[in-house]
Length: 130
Image (cartoon, rainbow, N blue to C red; front, side, top):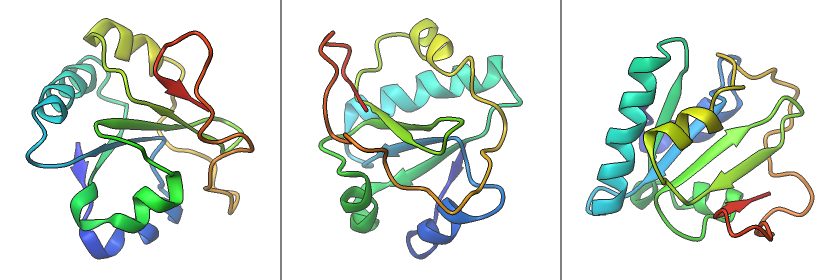
């Protein structure tokens, strides 16, 4: 898992090798530490999957851009360039299934914001936001 530097998150997000998966955390969050360990296991299972990591304490602009409500948060970029947010890290199996369709790099089309309806939580109580 590659940790982003505070001053480079915008460049990382919009670069040619922009990640499809971004784990947003804070260093003193115990749940974040557990979620990071779970994602590490998923990375071991799927070495082709690139997961970037961002410390929200030093990147407040990231929270504003994606309207992040709490941490840990997993942002996943779809094939259409739209991002979805997940706040629930139930199990390694759930995370692995959630990330099963993610390919190595997203197509960069200049669109890296959330799709229309961002911030609306799903009605199924899954902890996901679209």
